[in-house]
Length: 249
Image 1 (cartoon, rainbow, N blue to C red):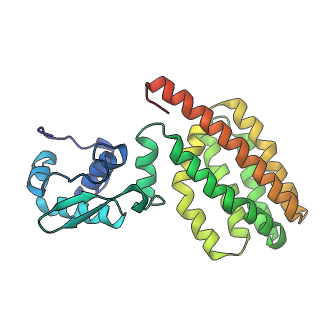
Image 2 (cartoon, rainbow, N blue to C red):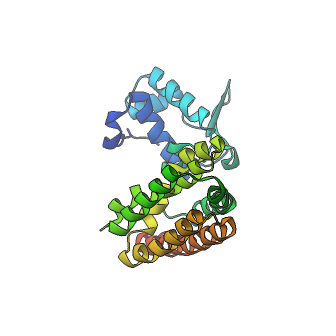
Image 3 (cartoon, rainbow, N blue to C red):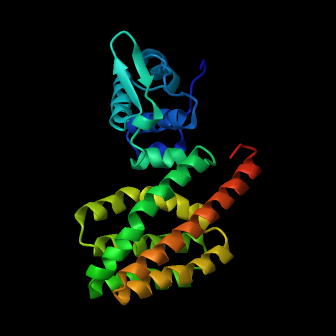
């Protein structure tokens, strides 16, 4: 890297060190700096980004907190192995999805969801209250009324978050908040197509019907079905994006 790097305009609302962390984090997650590689020195990178050394050091602290890098005396700042990254960190999630079509990350997310959400739906059927059901219905109605992807994402998030919250399990609720950035990105990929959105409404409706009926087994089955179909849709859309961008999927 021998020329000055222009940081992304969209980062202007963040602090200077936040912008630097965003720039370096994207390069790490995209593979420009692969695991095991050493980042340019503090002086070099500060000059490339036209920022102070203090801003650069604060950015490295942020990235270290996300598990992406580690700094040691005399050896510099090294990119850590990918399995040590905090993949549920909102920034890491964003960088992973924006670095290009990547099936492995999307599949890993759905595997996590397939472990958690069917069990959560079953638990919801046993514990939900009327307020929980009202939030789920509101989310379902919002999905049914959505005219495009952007209108769809909020109600879809609300529906799934309401199920997790209705379990009464604080850890599941917190996990739902952690997953929100990743879900937002996958919903944005999957729900571009009108036909896919229309097909997903009755699948969500089946989950709500089972939870309303306090049928835990049916709620579990309906969530398994929804996630299986959604994973197929995600992989198909990632394949389309990869083909359009000329990147391997």
